[in-house]
Length: 358
Image 1 (spheres, one colour):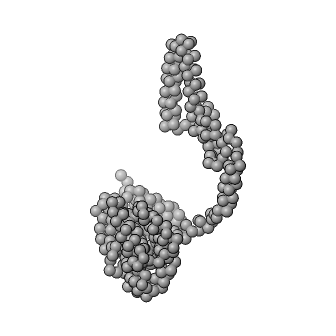
Image 2 (tube, rainbow, N blue to C red):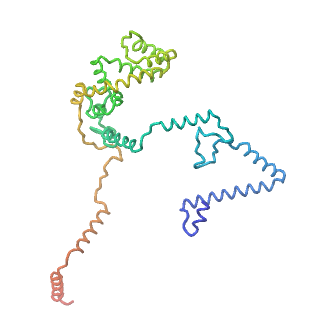
Image 3 (cartoon, rainbow, N blue to C red):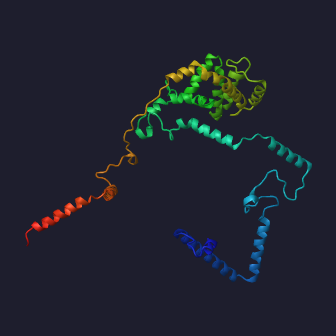
């Protein structure tokens, strides 16, 4: 701040609040400097020399070791590379090989262009814009504004007939379908007709194991194994041998995520195979045809003060003044008829002559 004030002497360097802060800081700095000088003068020469040596020794002991990042560094000096060889460290053959392997893997790593990733974000935003209650509103009305609970009734978890917007959202991607309880119920009905309902049942059991009670993890894992994975199980699922071996080994010491490999395998199987057939099935088409498309209701006046319309008993004075100025401007812009002006002057002069003298 001092440099800025010195540089802009001829100009107004600071605003009012900035100049006040600068004066307060200058005053505190001067007080601290005076106190330090007074304390230093009161000490004898030996004490001053000892304190100076202590300060130098402190920074020698607490300075950063070679190769470590310094907190005082900034800019490019602050950038750290975990694979960078430290100062005074000899590069061994193993370290060089690791570095070569690191750069080879970095070159082989597939990356996405920024234009492609930005295009994906734009596509996602356009796809979900109609379902954004803030940007596009919600039908029939926002219950927090209109005090109408019809929106919550139509969008209940397991409502008998869902809304059309909700059913259309199931076709966006598989995660939207399986995340919605009503969509998952419809998908389960479709899988039962295809004799593969155990896939979704296994996925739901894995979700219950993952987010359920920690004290019942062992019991749930054993139950899932007996029901879906054991040889001759009642609802046996078809997974590859490698995934089965990983799952069986993990069940010896069960935890929340012990079935992640099998769950991911079943999830991808439903996503790539069953989901596409579900969207083409009569079950989804019938659900879409019967779906409700609610109409927007008229908004009732809210009881909130900031939502009320402020009524005026008379027009605003600003508006009246603007109307008067516009009327005067129109009158000034109109062309003046000289004959009318002369006739008015003649009538005034005749009236003055006819008046009797006082």
